[in-house]
Structures are given as C-alpha cells and as structure tokens.
Image (cartoon, rainbow, N blue to C red; front, side, top):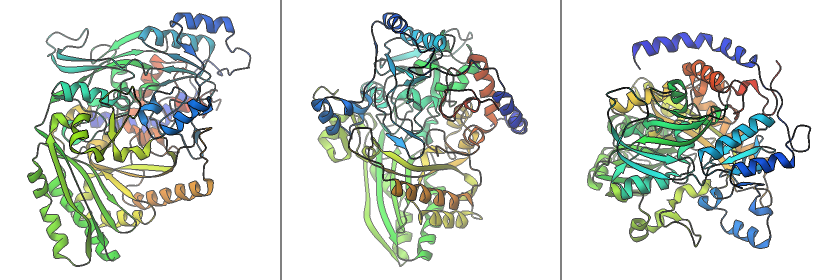
Length: 595
C-alpha cells in the first residue's frame, strides 16, 4: 500500500466505533411488510409490476414441492449445480446450522434487462418490501435467499461480449484502451472461461468453482486458482452497470461515481444495488496450466510437526510466487495433502519443483507416501474446455447431465460435494507472511497441527497475495477488500457440512452431529487464533457468526464503504447478512434497529 493509504487507514480504525454508532442512528424507511400484513401489495399492484417486466413476475417454487415428475427430476439432479442454479426456488447451499435455510421468496421477477431490475427496485422501495437478488446463488450466508421477499433473479442475463480495445464510458482523456470482457449478471464462470479462454485465447481472473456467478464473486473480492499471478477478481473490474435504490441505471467506473465503483470491488454489491453487467480486464494467456497432487502421512506427532514446518519453508522458498495456487491441507490423521495448480510451467518443470521436499521426506524416517506425486499440464486454452477433458481426463470433471445442457457446462469433480451442502460450521483467516519467517515457522506449524486435531485445515495459497507480482498487488490494493490479503500467504479454511436438506428433498439435519461439527470447527479455529488473534477474513468464505465482522471483512475500508452506502442507499433498501450498513437492521432485514 502507498504511504498515504496506510496513514488514512490508521486514522480510520479509531473512528470505526463512532461510525457504527452513527450508522445505527441513521434515519430509515421503517419496517418491511410481509404477505398477509397491512401494506402488502394488492393484486392490482402485482399486475402492474408484471406488465412492467413483460409478464416475468411469478411465485418461485421449490421443485421438491412439485408434482411427482418434477420432484423425481430434482432428486436425480440434486448434485448438479447447473440444475440447482436454474431453479429460482433453490440456492447452491441449502442452509447453515443455527442460521438460515433455503426457502423460496414470496414473488420473483425473472429479469432480462436493467429495465426489469429497475422496475423491481422501484416497486420494492415504494411498497416497503424485503428485496433480494440471485445470480449464481452460491452465498454461504444465504444472502440471495429470504422468506417473504421479492426476488430479482438475473440468471437469464448471461450475455458475454469480448472487447479488443475497451474504454470505460465517460473516462478522462487519454485513458488507454485494453482487452476486456463484458459479462451479464447471470453468467457463471464456466460461461466466461468458455468465451474468453477456450474460444478467445485470453484469460480473465475468476473463480475456481465453475458454477459460481461472475457478479457475486467479483463484488465480494473474488479469488481463483491463479490469483497469485493475476490478483483478485475485483482488481480486474473496469466498469459496472448497476441499479441503485433510487431506480437509476448507472454506469460506474473510476471516473463516474468512483466511490460506488470502488465499493463494488469487494464491498459486496448486494449492499449497494443490483449489478446488471460488468466489464473485466482480460490478460494474455500463459502457455500452460496444470495440476499436481500427492499425499504423505507422518507416523508420530513429532514427525508431523516437523513435516508441517518443512512444507511451510518449502512453500516460502519455492511456491510462494505467481506460478502456484490452490491447496495444502493438514488432516487430523497426520496426513498432508497437496492439491495445487500451476501456470506457465511444463509438467516436468512443475514436478521438478517438488523434488527438494520429496527428497527431505525420503531422507527422514517415519513418513509414508500415501499417493505418489502426479502432475498434469496442458495448453492453457484447454483448461476449461469440456471436450478436452471428455477425451483426455474424464474422471477429473463432472458434467451437466440434462439433455439440453450447453456442451461447455462442466465443473471439477472435487467441487461437486459442495452442491446443496448444509453447512454445520465454517471459519477462515488470512495468514500473514511473517508466519513464514524462520523465527515463527515452527510455531505456525505447531498451531496448524493442533488445529487439524479437531478439523482439517486447508491453506488456500491463491487466496493470499504475498508473493504475487507488483502489478497484481497494486491493482488488488485499489479495492475494498481487507488490505490484509496483500500480505497474506494463504487463506486458512476450516469447515464441515452435511448433505442437502432442501425442504421436501427427504434429507434432514442431524442436529447433534451438526453441533459437534460446529464445535470442532470452532476449536480448530481457536487453535489457529494463537497465531493470528482477531484475524481478518474473506467475506465470501467465513463464519456466519463472525465477530466484529466490519473489521474482519473490511478493516480500515469500512468507514468509506458505509459513507458510500448512506449516499446511494440512505433508507437501507439493500440489506444482506453482515453487509455494509446491516448493523442498522434486524437479523432478518425486516425491521430497523431502534437502539
């Protein structure tokens, strides 16, 4: 960060309690209405809205509540994220223990244009309705799901346009044109990768899970497998079209509504408006993308801690750079699992990188290689090409099995377990680079091993930018995401979940098991907290019950975000769980807090 930015951040932190107190006292429009209560729109009102949106107003239904054929199809497709995403009555996560359940809204506008979105926003504001928006529907916190609400569903707004030389609207003279891609609010990352990489021969920084919505990931900050090379997804945002609480369709960029534009880069768009289109910078494509994996198990606790320390040193010296990303996992049975990706390396060069660690393992007694090192490299253009994987590595992917599915719809097999899951507990922490220093690396290894006794701990190396190129760091610093990401060598993730429990699907919550799982996550997180007390964390992958969330998610950026919120949404039309300004509202988003 620049010196003046550090100074501004240090001055903002002591003012945060005063800012939050002022936010809680801000004038609000009053309690939202629910179906059956005074003020709920009448039939004529809903008819008027339906006409305004071309008849695309309906009551969303869960397919599990449908007829026998509909329910049978839903059960057959319950682990297909593309099917789940095409159901306005479902969300990709089916709930979070003690927090929320996936429940359809009362009414829905299936938007196909920004005009549809504006009509829904104006209607919700006029009639004091709880408003939610869903594109990909992947939120772990249920931010695209609220009972008794009006849903704006953007799934159909999935247009993608490539630009050879894009210049944002109304920007200052001399702004340099650059390659970019414009993406509609309902597009998923597999849609973007298919257009930009498979067919366009370029790269756009997006998410690792291919069925995640583009808009939600970018505006939450956004990390993908190769963020260590290209920075956060938010850093690539050049321009956005957004409908604000006054019903205006705004085109925002660094020169037009710059504070709102900045807030959309990591501040979570659903707190500020509804993004209908965004334009992202694209990058030259590396020659190769690839993946590498292996597993090794230690016999004793002493050997386990020694292995953990050694892998942290190895990561510091050999992997903390633009070539590598994804996961190093510490498991409770003293197993270290490596599942990483690389870019710009051949298969042979990638495998050779790991020989010092493998040599150390071989030279020291007490270690058993459970899965030998495997490396795969391919032309980068083929990395999201479903036809390539169908031919060369079908076991790595899962497909959209519906008869009318687009041919490019595929996801990584390892991500399929997240489809429909019901979270029991989840926590994360950015791990500062100082932990890799020789004076702290043993303590860091000890804490990771202690945490893994309770629950597996994954270090997602691509979700911390320490070791990234200077241009990626600079671009990511100019976002609303907590600045801790710039110095973090990884995001530590701990979580546990059960199978889908959508109402009517036949699943049920194992409450004793969920409580035990949540407790294990908490104990693992507490063990890590010895290293990083009050650690900053990533808003899109964290504890639903995160304490001091304003500081944890955004830190010194929160006062600016809140000021922007109060300027563009003074009455709090857009409320999400632990979103900017949500401290002024009840937990369900229906009533302003009075004290």
